[in-house]
Length: 169
Image: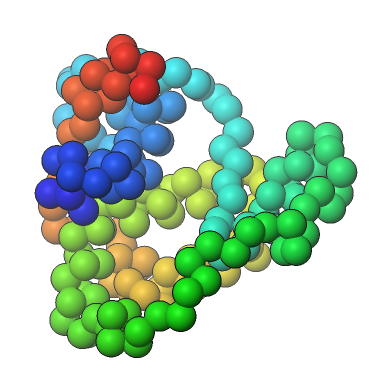
């Protein structure tokens, strides 16, 4: 439930890609019951700008240019190095069956990630394809899945969105 974002154990999973997309644009694009009430969209017809962690400098600079700023606002030298401690390889190991299970549980989140990626106004087609290719290396089945093909329905998080929108958290 933590990975699905349906129970609040850790903030990162609870406030997932699905949460932010639906918070901003509404739930209709992911819920199949057309008569269900949607969360009110805060933003409509807006550009989506993304900064991918693995391409942070290039993406930040592309957003900066779109907003009228300098063409090279930051460089890798400007970014602090996080998680720079050496890692124990045994701590990073996941069996193939564990990877498959994790990708399956994250299927809906991957679906929203792909939607956000394809919607990104600051990425060109090559950059979008690069990220989709990277996803294919980690979760190949989910990377190829079409809308609605995940083994579980998209969680209905409209009440969670209403709760936090009302509190301006």
